[in-house]
Length: 372
Image 1 (cartoon, rainbow, N blue to C red):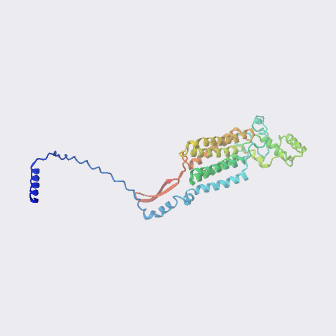
Image 2: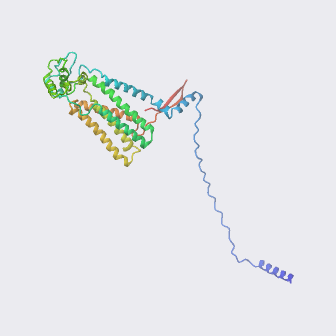
Image 3: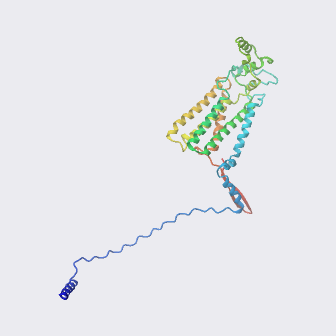
């Protein structure tokens, strides 16, 4: 039985092999052409800076040391620091002991205290030129520098708080100091060299020469000021309010240009330029900063205009004195601002590189860099 079953299974297997297969025959797919291999370009390798030749290693070391940090400012800005210190000393000296005004005014009436000739002073055509009364200043002389420097310091603190840039604040304060001091030195020297008489000069002559102990030159009318002195004494007040010192009298020949005008416009213009570059048109400005900054710019220039205008209403200056003084201050401010900042308010970075060069029959060392 076991053998028969095996034989039957063998027969069935042989029959199955003899019959054709009913499953469809699959044709292998045609081979597709291989896509061309894309060769990716190799990423450029970073350039390796060759080491400097032995002759330049000392210069390369120095260049690296002054690239940033305290040594950077000490090296690149040493001329600025020396200039600020020098101009500061000159300013103090000019304010404490101003040079004697010119004996002959550059234009207009003149008075020489040495010969006491009053011919020019009392000519009728000069009644409206130097015949104004002497009065106290609406804006004291100390106000423009004190208020202006306070505004500059506050702006510097604000700039550092918003940008956290020491370089920006350094350039801002350095440029402001240079602008103010250069304006002051140039303006004070112009005042003494031009020697123009102030609009209140006749009254100054009376208040100086008619004081007790002084002898007035011919033509000076002492009656009005002496009557004013007696009136004050009758009220129990000191008559010293009427008289002026020799310094105030000599200052009457230092009208051109206006010191109040060049001081206030130097500060206001520099402040307006920095606010513009930082908060209005510069790359770091935003919609939120523009309106307040524009308002501050308008306030600064308006204050400067008020100070300059008060010199006209007080009878301290002629119109030309104020216009030229304002132009001097604004021009100095713009010059020193753009010495340290570009049009977008970005501070310049001073740099210097030493490079060798060769010429037929010669070798040398040159340098290149940015030294605004």
